[in-house]
Image (cartoon, rainbow, N blue to C red; front, side, top):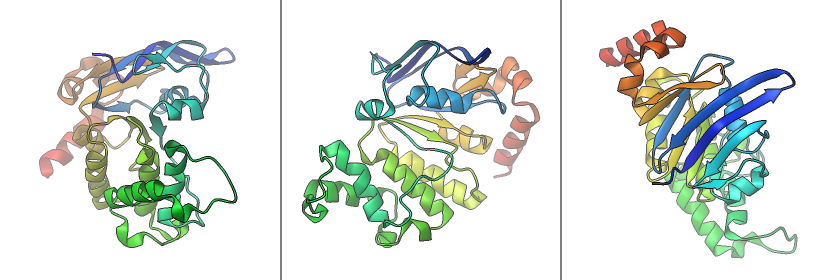
Amino acid sequence: MTPSLELRDLRKAFGKTEIIRGASLAVAPGERVAIIGPNGAGKSTLFNLISGRFGATSGEILLHGRRIDGLAPYEISRLGLARSFQVSNLFNRLSVFENLRCAVLWSLGYKYAFWKFLAGARDANARAEEVLHMIKLDRRRDVLAMNLTYAEQRALEIGITIAGGAEVVLLDEPTAGMSRSETARFVELIREITVGKTLLTVEHDMGVVFGLADKIAVLVYGEVIAFDTPEKVRADARVKEAYLGSVLAEAQAAAAGH
C-alpha cells in the first residue's frame, strides 16, 4: 500500500546549522500519527517542510506517492494536504460561516471575481454548512470569528483546514491553551472530523497523544528515533531516555486516575 505521506532521508539546514537530520517516516492512509519530542527537536520545521513553507536541503517528501518537495504551499494544498497553525489564523471580521465558505471556494474551482455574488454559489454554501455542522458551531454560524471563545476559534480553524476536502491533515498543537475539559471535547471533535483521513499532529499534551494517536513518531535532534504504536513507544528505552521520562510517568498516572 502506498503511504499517504512519506519522508525519505529529509534534511534541512539553516546556514551551517542542520535542524532536520535525515528524518524518514511512512504514514499509511487513514493513520493518526502524533509527532512528539523535546523543544528544539525540529517539529515545527518538519511541518513547514511538509507543507511547503520551507524548502528541503535534501531528501524527498511524497504525498500519495508523488513528490511534493519543491512545490509551493498552494500547490501542495491543491494536491490534498492541509495544515493548521499554532496560532489561530482566521478572518476575524467575517462570520463563522463566511470563514468556512472562503476555505471552500477555491477547492470547488471558484476564481476571484469582484462582480460575482457568493449567495449563488450553492455548492460552496452547502459544503460550508456541512463543515459548520461537523465542527458543532451551527449556533454560532453568524458570529464574527473575533467574538468566538478560544476553543471555538480553534474548532473553526480545524474546520477551515478540512473544508477543502484534504485527505492529509496536519494539526500543529491543536489543544494548546485549552482547559482540561475543553481538551477532552476537542480531542473527540478531532476524532470525528478526521475519520477516513490521514492525520499528523504535533502535540505536547501526552494525554492527548496517547488518547488520539494510532502511532507516535518521536523526533529528537531532527531525527525520528522511534515510530510505532503508543504501547511500544511507551516501552521504548531510547524514547524514555531521550524525551519522556517523568512526563510519561505523569501522563500514565493521570490516565490511571481517570
